[in-house]
Image 1 (cartoon, rainbow, N blue to C red):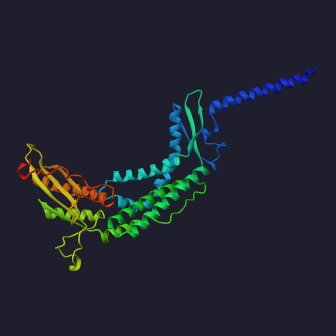
Image 2 (cartoon, helix red, strand yellow; image 1 turned 90 degrees about the vertical axis):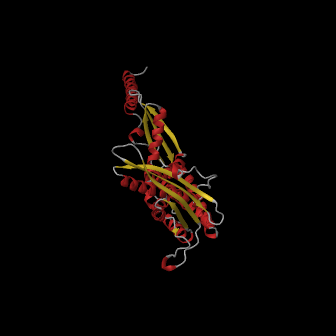
Image 3 (tube, rainbow, N blue to C red; image 1 turned 45 degrees about the horizontal axis):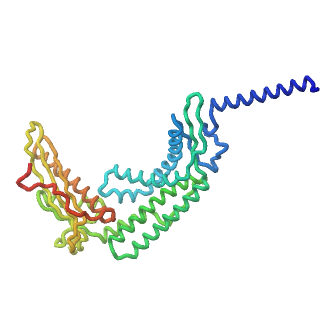
Length: 376
C-alpha cells in the first residue's frame, strides 16, 4: 500500500509539471519562438545568416524574410560601388543618371540573386491572437561560401580570357569590346566579392588579380589614341552644331578629330578617321497663333558610317519644338536643346556600336526633317 504522503507528492509533482507545460505553451503563443526576437539558438549566426519576415499570409511573410536577407547584400554591394566610379563614368556615355542608376541596380540584382539561391525557409509561426504569419529565412554560410568561391573563379577565368584576347588582337574594335567585357565581368566579380564578405563572419573577401580603375584607364587611353571620329554637319547653324556635337562627344570620352584637310595640333596632319558622323540640321520659326509665346522647331538626321566601305553602322533622326516669349529666344532655346539631344543620342549610338552592344541598322530610320518647303 502506497503511503499517503508519497501519493500526495506524486500528485503535486504531476500537477506542477502540467502547470509548467501550460505556462510554456501559453508563453510561446504569447511571444512566439525566440527567432522572432532575434535569438536563434537553433540557427547560430556563426553558421547561419538569417532574416525574419512578417505578413498577413505565409507567402508574404516568406517573401519579406527573403527580402530581409537580400537587403544585407544589397547594402554591401551599394557601399562598394564607389570603387567602380571609373566604370560608371565609362557607362555614362549618352545615358541619363536614371539609366546609370539602373545599371548599378542590375549588377546588384544579378549578384544578390545568385546568393539567394542558397536561402531557404528555416521555420514559420502563426500568432494565434493576431493571426499574423512569421517566417525565418536563412542560408548556411559554409555552403553559400563554397558556391560563391566557384562563381568568383568562373568570373576570374572570363576576365583573364577577355584581357588576353584584347591584348593580342590587332583589330581596334575587337580590342575595345574585349576590354569592356573584361571590365564589366570584373565589376560583377567585385559585386559577388562584396557578397562573400557578408557571408563570411570574418568579413574578408577574395581579392581579384585586376582593378576596375586600371582596366578602365587602359580602355580610355586606347580609345583616345587609336579610335578617331570625324563629324560633318550641313544645314542651319552647321558650324556651331558641328563644334557643339564634337565637344559633346569628346566630353563623353569619344575621340573626335577634325577633317583630314584641317591641320591638327602644332600643324600636324589629322589621323585618318575610323568612323564618320554625317548629318544635317534645320531650325525654323513656327507660325502658331499664340498671343503669349513664339515657337521654333528643330530637327536632325545623322548617320554613322565606316570610311571606305561607306557601311552605315548607326543612325539618329530626332526633332522637337521649343517656345519662348520672343522669336529670337525660341530659336536660341531650340538650338540649345537640339545640341543636347543630338549629342546624347549620337553618343549612345556610337558607344553601342563601338562596344558591340548593337548591330548596324537594317535600314535608315524615317527622316525627322521635312523638305525645306514643307516646314510648319
